[in-house]
Length: 444
Image 1 (cartoon, helix red, strand yellow):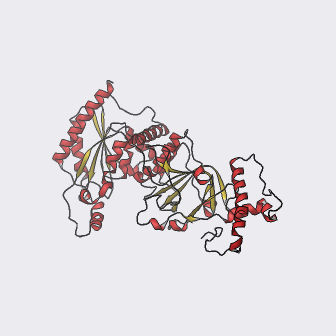
Image 2 (cartoon, rainbow, N blue to C red):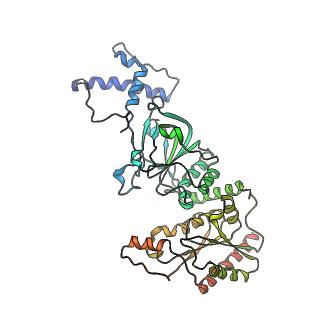
Image 3 (tube, rainbow, N blue to C red):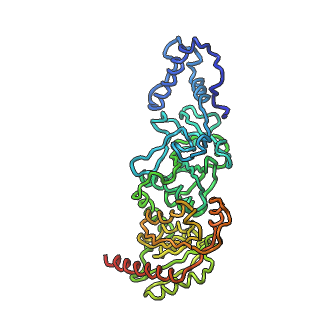
């Protein structure tokens, strides 16, 4: 328990018979303080009559009482461990979140009328156990002892996943990009990052760069001396559900914003579309898990089909070797993305709208992977792309275990074979569709 919080089990030195007299004496100055915080021009006086005890006439004493009444709660509420995303979620579980309107993400905005205009204060230095980190609400006139006041807007994010993986990081910053766009393009002074209530001190470079271009400023984190103690935020926007609540229309608007700003950031304002009749195909390879068993054979199929179509060209690329802007440039010059399932496919948001995506899986995913195997189909839909289907390898070693979780672990990072006949037919179909679409777009 925070040393400044008060225990409900602590015995009161005041006799029960006098509690009815003490309560209005205590509440009166608290109400006056709240009125003064709503209208600073009002003079504040804690001595409305000589009968008041002299110690209540001392504003310092009252503020001290307010500070000692602040109760810090665990950022991660273990009571919700069985269902962390239910209700108010296990992150700041005492505070409800809500969308600004239908179709918008869920936020907690502090201060607010519902919290009596109190500020959010956080004490968080533990990167391993979110239940050891804590939060509280405090009046701006009575912040916790030895706390640091941080002016301006702060984005507070809690994610169930991480800030390094491209897909997971994109999902975490999406609600903040939307908030930025819907609030006059206001930019945060800083970010405070959490995973399951555990403090995180950074983002992967791709995620961080996208966060910067999407929210209008350099990403600075609460860290160092600030993070070592209690910090209180002048204004905080908290998102803890990623894109939950966002309509497809709102998501598409955010991806349009990200695409446009990323291209400007990378000096590609005039990129996109390509030459009339040109079809740009990119094979985005992986290394290790979910890579093609024979990259040369798989690539050869698409190269041969491309050669049959006038104006078609193919690029063979590993995105792990590319900077953020190199990936943005590559995708802005891609009409058809061909890739195994994986985070590198997140780059599709930088392609021109109506571009095509072809996705490949190892054996075992269809039966065991759950909804996560469809995230890039969903992303293509939200970003205005055409997901042209998924090819799933049916060949390969069978799982030696009876347990489904063990079997998914066995299959999860498997490699992918190829089917020359199917790949050829599929590629020819997508190439023809792309050629017709681009010609139509050129004349409209």
